[in-house]
Length: 166
Image (tube, rainbow, N blue to C red; front, side, top):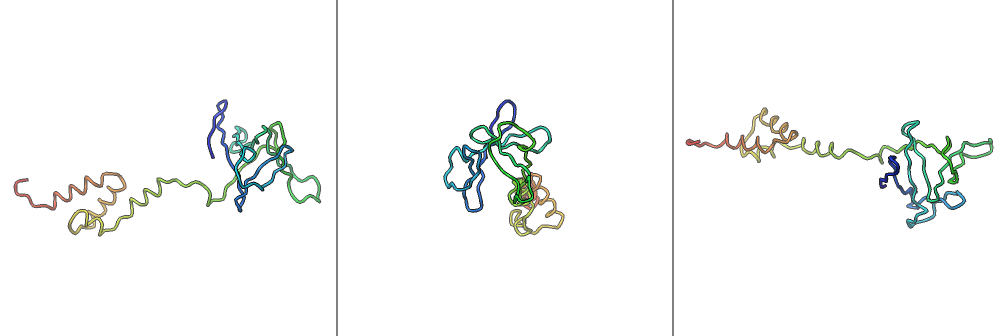
């Protein structure tokens, strides 16, 4: 997904793939299919964010037409009709896109923070060079989260050494 900018709007260019790695494309008649394995301009779509209602988008095709989803008109139809030949933005072209939780982007800083929090007592004692008390271990772990870990380790090392001239 790449980000574009046009007239102050934030647009996203994206490719839609199926479970078996086929790309969704829209032909010149507005019919969608998922048969292509290679990327071409037919397989790229542009998401245009709308102001009202918030959190909704229009999906624009290569030919400047929009994806439409129309409710079934008769009881015999099996589901909504999806086409890609609308030329105007209407209620049928406005979509809310939902993602499965496993595909949502995760904040990487939280993983880094968790990695910083997890340090064993043995690793801390090895860094300092002696056995540590519970209070010192807590201070070192807090310093590791806050970013002044190395300064505190140096302070504890200096405190550990016997220097009659220091």
